Every structure is written in structure tokens, then in C-alpha cells.
Image 1 (tube, one colour):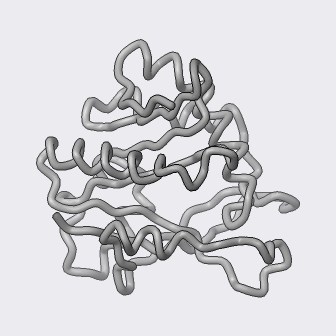
Image 2: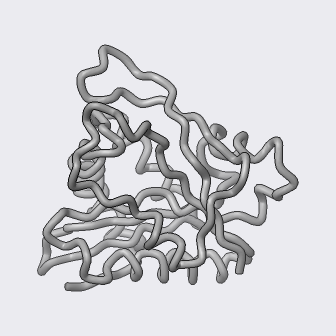
Length: 193
């Protein structure tokens, strides 16, 4: 396994595989995302075009099996920064750890920790004093909630992240079996350095 921050040509070359990973992994509970290649290409170009963003890749040989991204919160979608509007937290101090997607066979091997380590180190180098991410909020009795699902809350807490009280983002995507996009609530978690 090789875990590395990707820049330049390596980042550009990885974007189609990252889009595919996002679509595949986010189909799973709790996101249930009915992905779209056109949207993914447009979304991921923001990481390519922002010099303060980071894309971390996990490779098994030459195959990308996981990816993680991050960017200044103020540079990401307005929906996430707006979630902070009722708090006394300064959006400009936060680096947003966006997605971490990893194929099932590679989970539980410490790759998630490496994703966070590299993004947090990058955030510090860029002068940020906190990191945050969002996790979708789904009801426990949702019909597609698998009995085998284990929430990532304990992992995030061990990394020093806590839910930011009252900081709930809303973001639209199309769930599997939904006819159109709908707003989903997302809890923002944060860690201060």
C-alpha cells in the first residue's frame, strides 16, 4: 500500500478514479448517494484548481483504492460555511476535511488515520487552527440502515473530533430510489489544534 498526497499531473490523472470511488462508496449507507459522473468531474476540479486543497490517494500497486480530500472551509460549498452562521466559530480558521472514500476490503488497516494525518498536517502548514468535516444524519429506523453498520463516531472521537453543537449543514443530493435531489442534514464535527 502507498498513501500519498497528490499534486500536479498525479492529481489530475487520479480525478476520474476518485470520481468513481466517490460514486461507489457513497452508494453505501449512510449516504445512499445516486452519483453522477458529470457532477463528480465538476466537483473534483475544485481540488485541482485550489492550491490550498489536498487530495490524498491510497494505492494498491497502481490501483487507486481510496481517496481523501480537503480544502479551506471558506473555499468549499456555501452550505457548509453557512452552518456556522449561528455560532461564534470563525469559518476562516477551519480547514474542511471533505470526503474519505475507501473500498471495503481496505478498511480497518489504518488508512483512515493516514488520511486524517496528511490532511491535518496540510491544514497546519496552510495556517489553519482547526479542521472539520460533515457526517450525514439519518434516522436509526431508516429502512435501508443495515444491521451490520458500525458508525464511525468512535474513530472520529479518538482522533479528537467532536460534534460542533448546533452546527448542522444542509446539502442536497439524490438518494438511491429517490426521483430527485432532497436536502439532507449533516452534523459538523470539529477539532482544534
